[in-house]
Image (cartoon, rainbow, N blue to C red; front, side):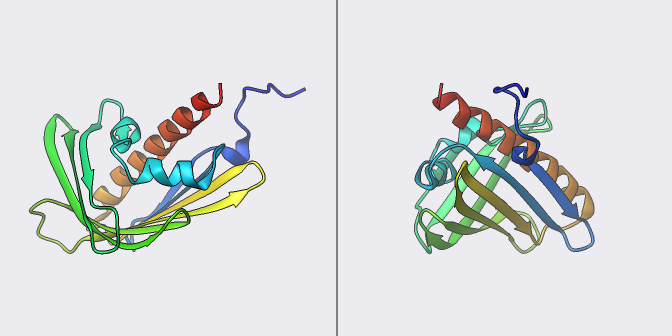
Length: 162
């Protein structure tokens, strides 16, 4: 008999990367509603889960969450402060969110970040695509960050059901 508290292998967060194209895809199932999960992606709640222990910690987030609205985040990564910024390109609550993503002052074009939420009988399938990252090193570090961040978000959502 399976342990009721053990995560189902199909529900684990998985993140993959293609360093040649600079694209990341991450996905997982969250035991909640699309509306609740969308709120976690578009509010200061991001500071609770956009983390990779010992590597980066998002401490501030603000956003004008609408098409054309701007967002910004700041924290500490690798022992150094960081700042990110972007614009919301597509806002289809609670199913889809697309935004640009760039380190403040970086000399390259912004990356694109897409969240797609699909209701399932056991919760919500979240698929994240992050494309246009500048090089293989940034791509791999970002992939690892998304994996740990989405795992943290799953933990937060699961704790709400207890």
